[in-house]
Length: 289
Image 1 (cartoon, rainbow, N blue to C red):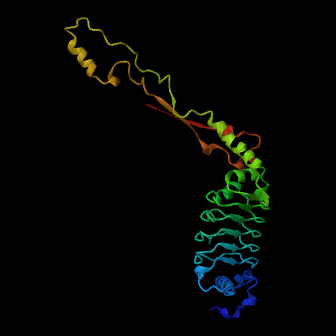
Image 2: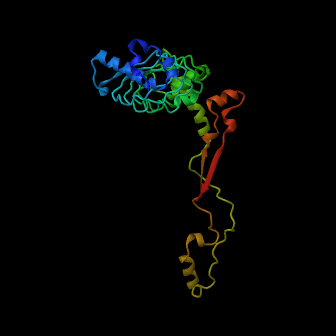
Image 3: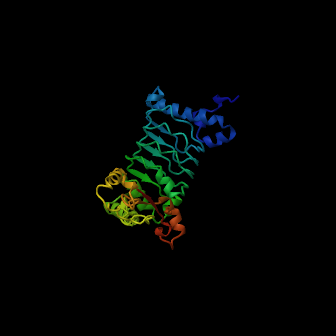
């Protein structure tokens, strides 16, 4: 059984060392730090905690903080975190500091934090641009983002790609997002897609129609009005599709759409700089009546 009394306030400066000795102590010491902060702020209940600082503690793993329902500000910078998987229930977070860690992937970790206004992720090991930016898709309040000193920031399209896909941003990597940058990003990404869309007709009428399998021929005119009255009445009662020569003539349409799954992603485009995105373009056409 672990003797928790051995670890006092002054001995919790490096949780990573303690974690190596006993992973169970991570939870005890983390919450001990939080309790100390609650006492310093005169807070007694977890539901009243609005800010937590766990920066520079040597953390390589994050404990579940879902019990702090009103948490707005969280400092986790200066640790050794490689993944984040314990913040899914902290919906009220508005500022999150994760810089100076060892993060290699944030997929699925931040998607639900839609109230974030400030997110610091600089100086980590994030490499996948599109996958990372997708995490910010629903963060409509995100105004300040820092991804500098990550491998993905070396991508030639990084800044424009980020500005275009996170339109709420006002500052990116400590630089103000200018109106001209937004316009250039829109031209770069919207026009590429529009150029492909312009080559596609949606709901276009198929004027020529399909190849006829039957020759059009007029109805045989009756040689005797009286004798052929019954046959004429029978022809008039027949459905248009049953009349000779009218099969497959009217109301044929064709619908074409672009197969976006064939468009190369940013990373793939970088590996194939000599090719145009249109090289892999595929148009799927559906014809119906």
